[in-house]
Image (cartoon, rainbow, N blue to C red):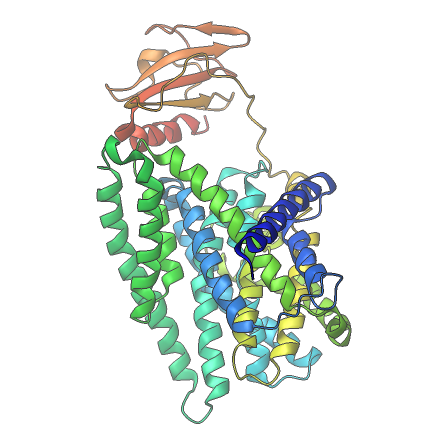
Length: 485
């Protein structure tokens, strides 16, 4: 095919994706569903007429896309934000995934013509929440900080568990004489263990490197981050570990590292993750043949509703039985189990295998994902509001001072609430490190140059100047300021 024609088609497809995203934002239709629909329209059953049934290629596209999405999710987060929810998130990512797989498997065995192993395989495929959907949804909601961070950490951490279970069950089904339960357990332990070890080692290395990148290589910082993503996934994958866990940990480490390039990297990878979603959902949409969906429509919808209203809430309650979440918080965590790209990619894993009921599993997953995206994705904030679990949106201010890109300083902002510990304190009492200062206090329409005796009032917007290297320490100070009084 002529190179110019190829570029024209790619450009047209990207332009269409932007229009689809714009339409999605205006109509409230989840982006995931919109892109899947675009892929289906382009497919052989749609007006596009593209004959595509290469499950192996879709699997490869899905893997690359998930790597980019997980790396960006880690990059946009910070370990200091997640460490307070590490335990419940880890339990949701492991115990919650297993409980979801088992309960969904029982339901699938009753609803579809599947063996028990095939039913549990379907359960494993839909067992993890979707990082792309969760990250995107939480960026535009005001769900309480602890719950939002738990969901972020869970969505980044449960993919490796679901992937390991899926691969293990596929191997068991394909070779029942040489594989068994012990092999499944061993595979899960090896994947998670090696992924964790390699991820931590490379995360330490990445922290050291990105904290020391000189200004002369500033334009190449995104190249360095892409190299880190590729190495972290590949190094774990080639030794049989979970590359997805490794790449998320490395992204989390880089996002937690004070660096003058942090904003640049965040913007670059946010765009790259969006492009990955476009490619993933369109390619996976091409694999969906609407003419084949009618055979499993009833059972697929029933499974999707059971997963939303019964399986996910039970998995949350079991996983958080010994944590101090309230009943309302557990209810919201149960409702926030968004399914998206990961189940569809894992369904492509099944399609590219020798599992006889692969088409049934893939089509069932389609209904699970669409129902979850429409039902949960569009109502999450409303449910949180009904449960009284939304934080008030902080007022937005334009910073009265600016910090240049080449400056060694960061400008950080903090909005004071009436129940924050800092409210009523004098500036000299706020406990900032010596190298950081409150540069200005915005109170109403006034900008106040603070003195040591200036009293912080509820509603004040504080702008703090601090060196790049002090960002973690400043975030700790902000955490103390937020403590309730």
